[in-house]
Image 1 (cartoon, protein in one colour):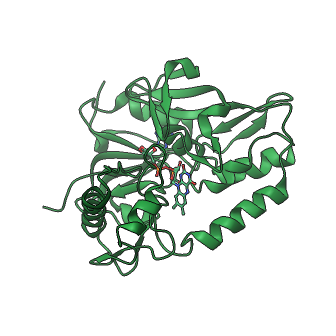
Image 2: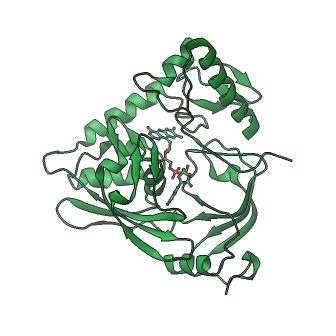
Length: 299
Ligand SMILES: Cc1cc2nc3c(=O)[nH]c(=O)nc-3n(C[C@H](O)[C@H](O)[C@H](O)COP(=O)(O)OP(=O)(O)OC[C@H]3O[C@@H](n4cnc5c(N)ncnc54)[C@H](O)[C@@H]3O)c2cc1C
């Protein structure tokens, strides 16, 4: 029998009007109407099986690629990262990791197991689930190059085993079965590649010296257009340091927008639009944003 959220019996935690600014790396975002932290996969499946099908559902990783508008998210936000933390070596070349495993942890463990290429995962500050949804990548590596299979859960709480053939995967873009979310992935590594902890540390050091990592951001805001770099186009358009409200185009890396001073989501969204318009006027190139913009504007 279908039910409204308030009537559901769950083992996990349900919070109402939870500020999403607590759950995004930009530190902005209005409230989630309902924020559900399931206690287990069974708890999540039971919740989904009972939930009214017309309640909007949003799956949250750790919010490192999310701009939640100031009016917040209607319906239910699922935060399953704490319980999907398993990571197992299946055989000589395969690792299964839950959607809540931080990519940095996946990188370190795979390097310890001598499975590569895996160093690039350390450059992605989100979860395995977020990396699967985004085809996140860094330093020449991309998530889906290593995916052998995934497990998903659908809106009715049913689990599915899926192969990469079920998905259309491109640069920072993944489309697959509707209304399914990633629960875990099995990664297949390359027997001819030996990963290196030193290489991973050097890569992180290069990032620290070129990116504003101590300040709230979502990493690169725009995808790189074919054959070009968004950061270069934005810098050449004279936008470094440009501010709207508390949001600023980073002076260290032009494709980062930082929350410099108590920005609102609308400050950031306006700045994104300003950068897009200006780059088009100056270079004739239409930038596409990589960050996911979700939720409702403040009424
Ligand atoms: C400083 C910094 C540097 C960054 N550098 C990089 C980089 O080098 N390369 C790169 O690719 N990205 C980078 N990012 C962006 C970000 O870390 C990645 O996009 C990451 O994959 C997002 O993971 P997340 O868990 O934070 O997902 P969230 O931001 O919470 O969600 C992102 C999207 O994924 C969906 N999602 C999350 N979990 C699931 C799931 N289990 N099933 C289905 N959908 C799901 C959400 O619904 C949302 O649409 C950077 C971000 C920051 C802050």
